Image (cartoon, rainbow, N blue to C red; front, side):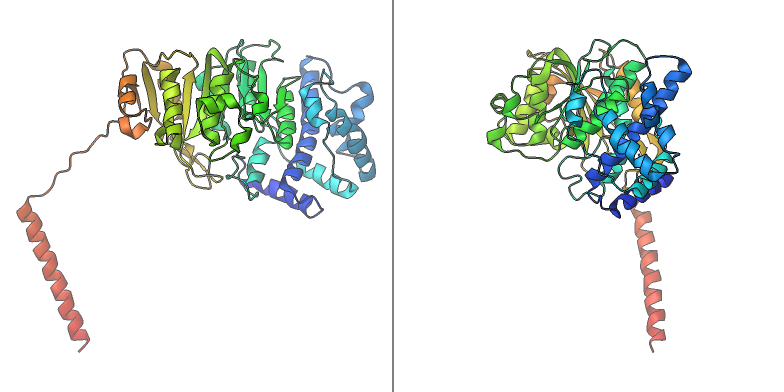
Length: 469
């Protein structure tokens, strides 16, 4: 999350690009991403050399393409020539497979900075922005979205990094998992899963991470993001996940982590027929649940962020999707999140649904958790605060047991009770409300106080009348 000095630096960088002709925010972030990518490659090269691991990224003939070389050039014309004509083509064709996804997405990438003085200025500013161990471009993208008119209305806002990390820790990806995000955006979920697995194993994971998106900018950013986190040939594909053109993908993944678009609607004629057979709707948040069930292998797990409306919506489509999870699969958990999690981009209340694809049911009890604080203020500023339920959520999730013992925040609800309530998954429907006993004074004492108050009012009125003559 960009705050304070970092926000000022990004504002200045954007202003510099806007004042020099690159006024489209998405074009701006692409240019920033390319330069950040080149900078991060240089950081990785230094790490490799320091630890004496892996093959060098830059050949002896390419050393002048490194950030540490050209950033110090006094001749801005020479800097532009190196970046535009050599370093940028180098990152466009980076990867072990020249026909891989990364190369496909970078094929149409264009370096738009043509002014030597502008490039020198931008390079200097980017050099002052810390990029080590950051979700490449993700935080910048999240902040820039606040400047787009479409932000928050077309589902194009990022999931906060601490929420992504929370979900990954809930799901505990394994080294044999085939992981997918069907609405991957900048690749935040896939990066977090790769980071988690990076702490467990050094095995090759080239075929383990898959992401779909139809936005070419996001495809490029997520591909760069994953490559910088050790995925040499990321399986990021240009797909409209709900389209009938991609019905062939099913039973393919063992773990899906996703935050699909909210409150969207698609043209019914374009929706995959097998999804329409499951749920007859044009609402994206409902269609993505049906899609995720289709994409999972039997026994595969999913954690999906959904708007609260999915939990209690009364339409036939809402009830159908909840019944699908409870009756035909295994709904493991419903985690209610506070409404400010996605501010300043959206104030919608959300929840995390965790389920396992079985095809035959097996829901016995559903675990609920009422998360009321996430460690940040729930206003547009989203400043760090002490209140944070995430550590307790993770602890209680790991300690849940078959005896169905719960607390005020975490508890189990039997499938039969959920069924009796029309498959409503609203946490407040099942949460026990604790009432505090209130002691009232005896009626005579209250009456005496009222009379005393009345006398004081009358005295004040008399004084006012005397002042008015």
